[in-house]
Image (cartoon, rainbow, N blue to C red; front, side, top):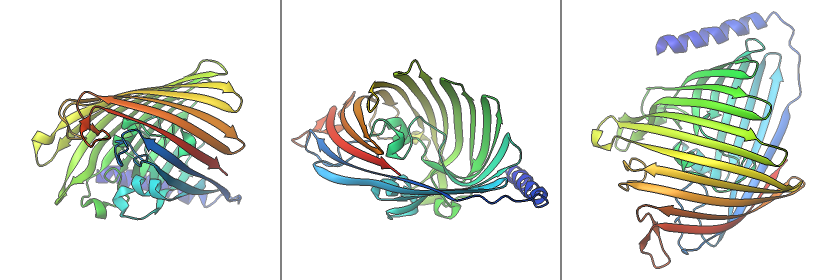
Length: 354
């Protein structure tokens, strides 16, 4: 491990040294941002009945997140800063403490060549189809695959691109930790990706393996997870696009092997352009946690259906959404407060980019 980190550091340092002899061309700083909010009615009339990220309220107007991004490139070096404000940012960076202002991403990159780049810092996960910022998804609520997969990594990664193919490998702190001090461990996580991006299709094979969240009360002992992930997309014509995410996770507990297990998710996406400013998006997911390593319910299986309409007015997008989740075990709570295997809700969200 130490040799791997040392080699990457030496590669980056050597490349920067050679670049000092070349003229540096200054460039302007680029700014961007986005914001979102929503109103949700859970048909059970229960708060916190949803089990996926960011939309667990009932009968309440909720601010999602305001994001401010800045990037600058000078010669072969660049920096990217992504700041988040709001509950969505807090939930995303849950290991950073109870703050609503978070550094979502902060990366320093260096182009060793036109095809080889090294990046250090905190960056969003390469696992999965969905992204943190609501403006980047057509469904406002999140999948179980997103909710239970990694959110971000902090470390170093190298990427090589050759034509339509790219290869990435890296080493980071325990998953979802910006510092090993808070993780209570110096164990590392390894990440990798092989990707193909064509004109109308793309295919990604992703992997992450290593330390994840620490066991409560045992900061020196961590759970370890190996996750394999496939993401594919295909644009069939000018109106219809399809997507797929298949992810499989193996979780091992360093202290109690009875807590070992696996979970997986299969998610399909369909997007149809009704008119230039109207898009219809459907997501179908099957999530299996039969070993109860995520939610603690033995034999749990979930089928989630989400239908969203995206109506664009300039930079503003209005998203009415209907979602129905059914489970093999009583996993939710009905309007009487009793366990049930059905959860349904409707929400109205707005997003804006600038």
